[in-house]
Each structure stands twice: as structure tokens, then as C-alpha cells.
Image 1: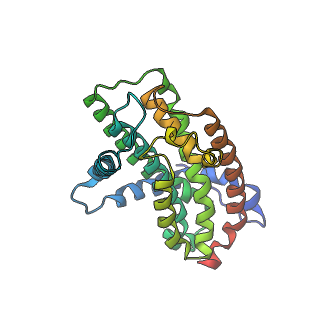
Image 2 (image 1 turned 180 degrees about the horizontal axis):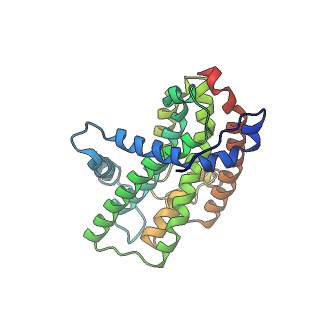
Image 3 (image 1 turned 90 degrees about the horizontal axis):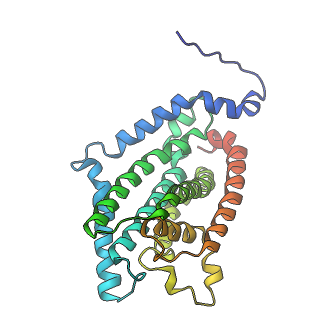
Length: 276
């Protein structure tokens, strides 16, 4: 029978934090499975919502932006596929960011009763969003088959942009998770930021349309621009607009924010109990 030794001493949690995080990996699994089961509990359609939401959003956006606004996509690429690729990776980021931002307050009962590395909660929040992402990616594959559109060697870079989207949601989500514990108004701000970001990012349109504008250098400072354009490029091939400079900015900005957010989270997590 496997046993665990619990040692209580001043400063131990700080000194052995990352070791404790690994030792509590079973808790990470339990929290992840709980979030998955709760996500669609007592719903009629269950996981089908992971297909319905992106499909419905794609149909509405294709009608509004292509048929009404007459926006043009990248040449040689079906507009619905371009839009769905953008929706798929954006939804992954947005859902993970939202879940991470509210994970501490959502688990307040657990936080106030027992010690464990609090970083487990944002890590477990990513799992549900990743499963939804895989389901939505399956929908993209089916629609791509319908259009008889086949990927080429660019698909090899797909995991890179998936990891970058995950790291971006984790980096920005950690900061908002800490702020949300101290200032509950942040919970009201998060949906607004997600909604604004949806239109600020190249989801319904191609970055090709703004590439020649004077403010384009500021535009690509948005780390999601490089991720979304790169994700499309890996799925749709070289006809999809992709500026390699944008992904360089994405990697640099995400790396800096990730280091800052982990430090900020670690610095403040001992105060979570008092603030809650």
C-alpha cells in the first residue's frame, strides 16, 4: 500500500513547491475529471455543444461578413473553412483563458480548507477547453472533407500553434485569476475582453486585408494574430496569409507574460485564503 509522508515546517511549501506540484498530480487528474463531468451535466445534447457552437458561429459569420459585408477571404480557400479555423483556435484560447481566470474563486471552498499547490487549479482548467478544442477540430476536418480540401506539409506545424494558444491562455489567465480573487469586478470584465478580442483578431477576416495599413506593425503586436494566422496556415496551406514576423512577436510576448504571471501567481497565492 502506497503511503505519503506529510512534513510540516516553516518555509517548506516555498522550498518544495514544484516537487509538491508533481506529487499532487493525482489531484490535478481528479479536478480535471470533475470539471469535465460538470461541464455537460444535466444537458440534453452533452458534448454535442462543442460542435453546435462553432458550427452556428461559422454560419452566422459567413452570412454577415461574406454575404452582407462582402469581405473576401484568402484566395483559393473556401471562406467557411477560413472562418472555422479562426473560430476553432480562438475558442480554445478564450475558453481556457476564461476558465483559468475564474478557477480560484470557483474552487474557493477547496482553497480555504486544505493546502496544495494552487497552480494545480489553472492547470486543470485547461483540460476541458482542450477537449472542446479537439471536438471542434474534428468538425473542421469533416467540413474540409466536404469541400475536398486536403492539408499539405504545413500541417506539421499545427502542434506548435496549439501549444502557443495554450501558453497564451495560461499566461494571461494567471494574471486575471489573481486579480479576480482580490477584485471581484474582474469577473465582469473578462467576458467583455473576450468579446472585444473576438473582433480584434483575424477570425472573420484575413490579416491580408490590413497588411498594407500604416498601423499593421501595431496590429501584429497582438499575440493572438500570429497564432490564428499560423494555425490557419498550417491547416489551409500557403494560400492562407501568414507573416512569420507576427509569430516571433507572439512567442516573445507570451514568454515574457508567462514568466511574469507565474511569478505574480506564486507571490500572491498565499493570500488567496485571506482574500476569499
